[in-house]
Length: 311
View 1 (cartoon, rainbow, N blue to C red):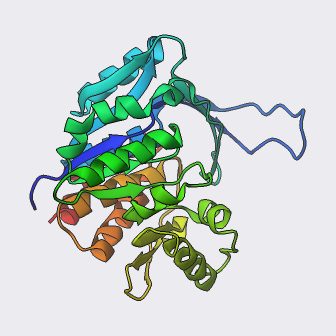
View 2 (cartoon, rainbow, N blue to C red; view 1 turned 30 degrees about the horizontal axis):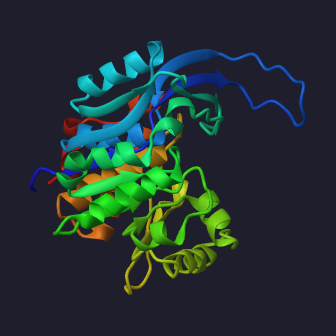
């Protein structure tokens, strides 16, 4: 495979992870004693970028950080991961984005609060200024943890290059998407919750997932890949029949970041020239490996740990 080149225009967060014996509730007011705490570098976009970099891609990021200890640490983390930080920018007014995360230590399931901070300071003009990084890529990834206008500008810039750049939109957290953004999105990658919110349809069964994914496809994206957690992923590529990619059975320790591991791996394999279904199969396998360890980026495997999936 050729060396994949990927540009991520999106978010950077610091994850504040607490492990708990169970989620509090129902209702307000209950205090639950946690069992462990971990600080990690995250944000959907940055997670996806790190996953792709660990597999061997040349990755650049277009992000905005706060001028604080979290921002300084995040910039250092990019360099340590081998990610091009030419377009890492700093906001003099906003604090770095943070994400308090609670993880049920029995099930590995998580609940996340996202405080965007400096991420919402990334402007369309700053994204356009990063055109050299975008045009150097085979794949451009965006999410919805920066202003939608900035994600839209990233895809506009990508489509201005004379030869095609594949655009991947991970619509998380779910929000209404402009028609233009959907039309210049090549691959939309929502999870079940996001699919239900964006389509207004039920996704309780695989057949319902197919119907909802097709409804999203009709809005503009050529392809939709619906991530299904432990059930794998559903691939709708153009006019091809839907393909359900099953996931290996594993005992999850922590599911935090599994979706990002999938998207980052998917981008890597597509940029390397793999067919979409095959890319999704490999990405599901890598995401399944990530739930076997605690943390987000700390759970992502390196290239040598998944060598059999890279040939």
